[in-house]
Amino acid sequence: MNRDALDALIATYRLHPEPALLALILAAGDAAAVLPLLATLDDQALADPVMRRKAGALALAGRDHTLARTLAEAGREPEDQMLLARVALAEGDSVIAGVAYRRAITANPTLEDVDLAAAIALGADASPTGDPEKLTNVVSFSGRRTERGGTAPHSLAPTPLEAATRVTFADVGGLEDAKNQIRRRIITPFLKPSLFEKFRRKAGGGVMLYGPPGCGKTLLARATAGECRARFFSVHIAEILDMYVGQSEKRLAAAFEEARRETPTVLFFDEIEALAARRRYGSNDASASLVSTFLSELDGFQQNNEGVLILAATNVPWAVDAAFRRPGRFDRVQFVPPPDRAARADILTALLAGLPGANALDLAALADRTSGFSGADLKNLVETASDLAIETSLAEQTQGALSDAVLAQSLKEVKPTTLEWLTTARNYAKYSNTAGQYDDVLTFLDKHGR
Ligand code: ADP
Image (cartoon, rainbow, N blue to C red; front, top):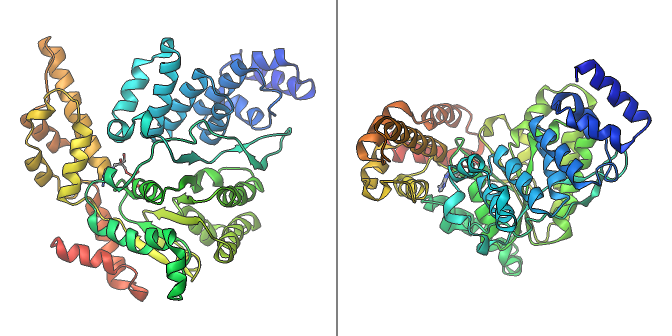
């Protein structure tokens, strides 16, 4: 069906919402053309699970991950879990993807998909924590649509992953300083509020984690929730910003409300700078109103934040407006540095687990030689080495293996990405270190002689 015909069909369906028409529209498989329609459909229009999944797959193809996730979470069949696995993978969350995938194929082995399984297994988090037995605390944020064109921010779809993997500090390699700081400044006040009250210390507002990309901010946030035995509720600012005017505010307010609904909860905002940058460059009322919604929700939490811990992460702390760091908002910041040697060894161990030849590798030497690598860089390194081993296997018609030589070869191709971040951070720390907010970066640079 060409685009004009499809558009005509969509226009007809808007006037006469017949299920048969919708089936035709979905069957055309044109994500870009149907996304605006999908966003306005109600639960009833997508009551048929096959249609709903089809719509979810199209939303995923059109990169509307929030919608795709909502549609996947609306059902509890293995096929829905499969869709959820794909959405989670697209979002870069291999832990959830792994859990959902295993659930799907355990219930219905015919759904097995080797490509998807391989993509998930290469995700760093997949193996060590992906045991469905350990499931307890991850909740994803999703709004459920109820009426045509509307969003009901208060009725959030219950997620089948309410019990997803409980990640704790044990799953985070190294980073002892950051863990100790988080324990002392975040977890203890959260778990023992009355002790803090006795000393007239307030547990305070939110905590902003900052550091180079791919170094475990999200992982630490999730592990903090695990340590607090709290639900983990994650909101991607960039996704919220993509929404129509007015919807973003509703979504944000709903996230705060949902977090309060069932405590203890860790409410995590990823890429918080997207909001702050919007405040600076956005000139229209809509962006200003989103930021003020956010700040007033935060301020409201100062009064009534029992059982909810607010965390945020950013790779660009210097782009975050100072208004965000006022008392009661993100008044504590925590540097999450590039993984130290111990952390790199841990991450590599997890990444290499079960790969052919991994047991014979000189991990200590590899950890030594990967200074400046982020967790994501290490993942890239192991993937590159695996690709080389696969190529050799194919060329030699025997199953090859990873070896120190293969990893040395990969090290020539994969370069560390944290150095550039550290250079930029050093400049900010030197020239605009108001209130010593980047002292930890300077200490880190001193300690590592950079
Ligand atoms: P960030 O939020 O800082 O951009 P993530 O937390 O998403 O980074 O980490 C990127 C990837 O690297 C994840 O797959 C994570 O599991 C892995 N990783 C990073 N740091 C660590 C660490 N210290 N221990 C274990 N895995 C890590």
